[in-house]
Structure formats: structure tokens, C-alpha cells
Image (cartoon, rainbow, N blue to C red):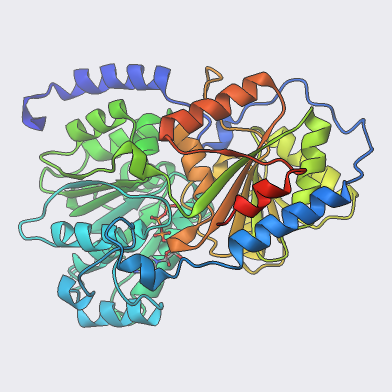
Length: 473
Ligand SMILES: Nc1ncnc2c1ncn2[C@@H]1O[C@H](COP(=O)(O)OP(=O)(O)OP(=O)(O)O)[C@@H](O)[C@H]1O
């Protein structure tokens, strides 16, 4: 199929179609909107209703601590994304890689690992476009393939993995380093903002993991490595990488320099129809692993909405939730940096210990905030869509959408919603997603999301104890 396409023309057409249709807000901090009409904390009355606090505490404890969803039980359920019949040994991984994954505490592959790895490791190499729910182990699937495909007798980059954000690239490089801990011959280079290469220097590492801008600089501008020698090209969060303005142009430029023999691996939890069609043009003769719409959202994440009168009552609801999260950690998503900073300032002023991560910060600050959160030094992280994808913090038990995700047209951004709530419920754990609704518009966005995934987002009525009994049942 790909051979028949007039590349330049097709890509130009697709670029303009997708640029019109796909939200710019998903992950790119440089295009976060400034919100209108925010009150900057004029109303200082944020007293909490003790009954609500206690109800939320009950819900959260019930849903999260009394977790019947043991990973081993889920592994035996063919409908679970953790289901697998094979062992890691049966996937013919190199002994030192097996040692690495067992050392990381992985006992058996998940469904996506079991399904994707035979394709990714096949000879001759097969291209793959894969979809699997958030937190089901896509990273290990492609990292194991990346590490397996290397020739360590030569010293130049052979594997390139692109991520949409600085944090995600760093995280993936950390996973790869841990998996390769018993393969000291494998060298991995991180290509993100802040990492520098002297002009004229050549990269001798086998793997480059980074963001598209830095990879373009090193690959095309400085010629620090030869893109045409890349044997394996991985696009994590592939849908956003080929559809979002900024990422798309850069990824296509990189893609054009790759050899026709290069194996391509595209991974994401979501692919809109148009994006999937585009992916099928970019990736020659791909094997496709795709979820049905009703399989996209996870059963282990309970979704709720809380009705609030206005921004102030959203803040009150949030402080109630905050009081109840001693069993884990929470991520709160806001639509704009401005709201995130406002909220963080406000909560801090009222004695809550929260962290905030937005595109306003330097990359050093961003990674420091995330590290502190991972270590549990802060229980609550307030952020924007910059952290909506890929970030894996096991202890996150609650995701709060302070603002529901919307696209440039103000419509429900269902893909971003799924990625955001997928920051909890990692690898079979239970999680809770709470959406704060403060207008008829946000209510209709919530309904649109519910309809899209055909999954109920339950009304959380802080005064109805019967409702509470049903939650977590
Ligand atoms: N086979 C396994 N056994 C046990 N834990 C695993 C296994 N595979 C992955 N994990 C763990 O599951 C968690 C989620 O994995 P990962 O981050 O790869 O998910 P993902 O599918 O890439 O999610 P997202 O769509 O959010 O990017 C990680 O903490 C990872 O260490």
C-alpha cells in the first residue's frame, strides 16, 4: 500500500486535515491555553463539609484498599489486558534480558507483551501498530524489542525511540536502563532538552531515546548520528506524535530519513480513526493490534462526577478529596497552566502540601517535581495535559479532572480523558477518577465522554449513603 502513495502530497494533505481536527492541547505544554474568566481566589471561604469529607474517605478506602483485583487472578481472565498464556521464556528473550525483567519483579507477560513481542522479534522484522489500554505494559513490550534487536559489536545508534514529552522520554530511558541492567555492553543515550552534544561529535550509543526536536537537531542539524542506519524506529504515544502540530512535522521529517528496511513500532492506548488511517500509510505493511472501543477504558478505574456550583465549589470538593487520600497519591488535571498555578497557590496557602508541574517550569524543575512525587514526598500533583500520557507512578490512586479535557473547538477530548484517567489503575490496580462539573457545558462534555466509551461515569452524591454502598461493590 505505502509504495503506491505520493508521499509528499499525501503527507501535506493529511497534515492539514489532522492539524484542523486534532487537539493541540493534548501534551504540548507550549500550546496550553490561557483560560478565561478565572476568579483569582477572591472568595476565600473554603470551609469543608465534614459529612462530605467522611463520605469521600469511605469511598476511597473501599475502592482502593479493599482491592479484590489481584494481578494473578486477572492474568487468568481472558478478558483482562493482563491475561497471558505464555511465559517470558516462551518469548525467546535473551537470558540477560530475562534476568533484567525478573529483577524488575515481572513474573509473566501481559496480553500486549505476549501478543506484540512475537511480531516484534520475528525474522524478517515486521512492522507493528499496536493499541493497548493505559498501564498494561506497552513500554516493556517495545523496550524488550529494542534491546533484543541490537548488534553490540558495532558502535552507532541502531534504535530510535521517540516520546512526546521530556518526562516520558526520561522515564522510558530509565525503564530501558533497568531492563538492560545485566547487559553492560548496551549503551543508551537520552536525547532531550538539556542534553548537549559537542558539534562534530558522533554518538556511539546503540539506542537513542528522546523527544523529536532534540533528535532532529542531533540527527539532521549536527549529523551526530546517521538516521538512515536506524534499524528500529519506535513511536510511543504514536497517535499524538503523528497528529499533533509540532510533533507531527518533526516526526515526519525524521521518518523520511529512515531506511525502507527500518522496522517500525507504533504504540498507544488510543488511535482515532483518521489517525489510524494515517499511521497505516506511514508504516508499510503493518501488523495491527487494535482494541474495540468498548475495550479501551479499564474496568478497574471507577469513574465519578461531582456536581459543583462554580469554581469555588470545585475547590471545596477538591479539598474534601484531598483530605481523603492518605491511602495513595493523586494527580489533578487542569486545562491551563494558569488554573494549575492558581489552584496550587490556593491549596498551599490553605496549608495543603501540593506540587505543581506545568510547561512554565524548566526541564530540571519538571523532573525534580516528578521525582519528589514518585518518592511520595508530595501526595498531590497538580498539572496540565503535559503529564496526561505515559507517566507511570504506581501509587496514584486518584485522578481528578478539575477541568474536563476539551479540544480546540471546545468539544470533549475523549482520547486525552482516557490517558489522564489512565494515570491511575496501573497494571491491574484499582483507581478512581473524579470529574468536577460546574456548568451545563461541562456536564454535556462529561456525557459525551460517557457515550464515547459507553462506560458509566457515576454521579457522586455526597448525601446519599446508598450510593456509597454501591461504590466499590
Ligand atoms: N509483565 C509485567 N509484570 C508486572 N508489571 C509489569 C509488567 N509489564 C509492565 N509492568 C508494570 O506496569 C506498569 C505500567 O506499564 P507501562 O508504563 O508500560 O504501561 P503503558 O501500557 O505503557 O501505559 P500508558 O498507556 O499509560 O503509557 C509499570 O509500572 C510497569 O513496570
